[in-house]
Length: 192
Image (cartoon, rainbow, N blue to C red; front, side, top):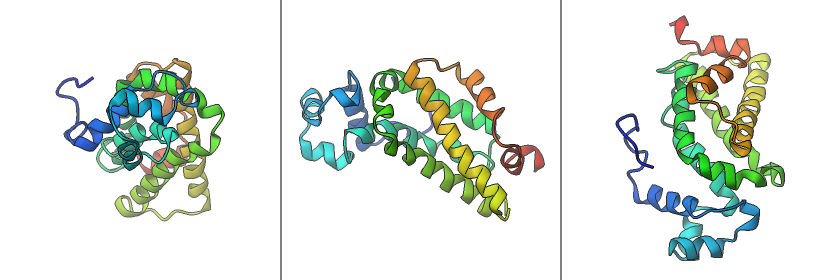
């Protein structure tokens, strides 16, 4: 799993991250079909340890994307362009590709869990627009943000759930190609 020099510092460093990865790697089927007790037994941890790290077994699905979000996606429009951010984010997501293909079958059954990543993305995009780009967010731009964060999450979830994820470079180009123009332009690095 740990690879080479392209991994950002802090990706795997902490003991909390290591425990969470052990729990994720213990998943060998849909989250609907596995219990917390199964995960604790497979990883040799207590239920207390599990619940100190995750609210429920369904929280496993969103932990890795929210953990890696801070390494590249949050930097879009701040220090890197859209395609670079997506390329590296998808590359890091792909480190746990097997987990997503097996575990995320539940997403059809628990649509309320789908709001976690869009929430993180919306907060980051709004912060970037306001604090880094000094752009006033009117109703139309907020509509673009709200629509985009849901669309982005759906695209990535479906690719991984169905096992059809393109290469990181191809995926980044495809995703960047469908971002609402107003939002894309507002965070374009070419404007700087």
